[in-house]
Length: 331
Ligand code: FAD
Ligand code: EPU
Image (spheres, rainbow, N blue to C red):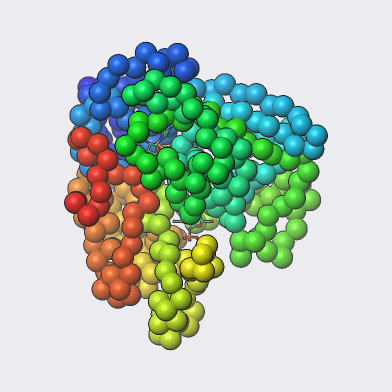
């Protein structure tokens, strides 16, 4: 058995049948096992049970940087720590990823849910994603358009039938620092250097989010709901301070954290789990939590929000049982 406790930031004591560290494409090509799950740092996963299969731990760390006029093409191995890459690129005056500073996890996982924070999504600066198909044994390069990036989504998240492993992400970055300051907490501020912006993002995140090395969690447990104008109009009549953001295709994004707080679920504790006192969108392990406690609390929160606002929250975390990924409708 392979201990998955260090490979899920919730810190749940779960195991898999086997575990293999993958350091190169050659290692990946040698994988023979069935029921394979690829993990980076496990900072977006919830295991509801021991996993009856082989977990591949991605540590492919190749890196190349090429200058092309005032652009940089950065080809990053999927096992590189995303935040270390961002810090290193800033020190080399290569810009575009500053707002994503301090997001836990690997480069290879980042395109899957198109990680985003503080007004930037990783898909904004991706040129290509390189994958290896574990069934057909072929490598394939996806252009930015083929990745179908959207809010917390991409081709890789919506087409799960193919066992694609992301091996490399190709970024198109800039030699000029042009800060993106559309996030409310950044607008009106000015940043002389990308390091200043990075430091601001790191401190904003420290104020709100628990450090997984101290308090087990997987970041936002739920996605922010996307709704149409009629829902927003009805909510605004009852709650004039409700935060609402414009989304794509004429739709609107609500703040799940606000809904959870207003449904009375901020900072609550149920057994060994709870919601974070400073950000109710984050479910935390208060010590020795069991998977079923996380599931029960998430379901409780979903029921409370549905009851108060008639809005169905959808989990953002990827949830795995003994046989593979589980849909919350079946839990
Ligand atoms: P894992 O959790 O290991 O894997 C996540 C999913 O991707 C799994 O389904 C896994 O099978 C799959 N996967 C992983 N690597 C590969 C690969 N190479 N090829 C194919 N599939 C793969 N997310 C945001 O978007 N914005 C935030 O601001 C943010 N803040 C966070 C704060 C905290 C404290 C925490 C704990 C998490 C936060 N997250 C955030 C979520 C998390 O950081 C991201 O989803 C991150 O990309 C996960 O990386 P990982 O390497 O840990 O992936
Ligand atoms: N809010 C509350 N109560 C709370 C939490 C939030 O009222 O308990 C309100 C805030 O006051 C604000 C609004 O909700 O008006 C939005 O809050 P915040 O700016 O903190 O962002 P978020 O929508 O809660 C999203 C991402 C985070 C990302 C931040 C910053 C999702 C699901 N979450 O959170 O990503 O870091 O924006 O851009 O989109 C993650 O995905 O794991 C994650 C942490």
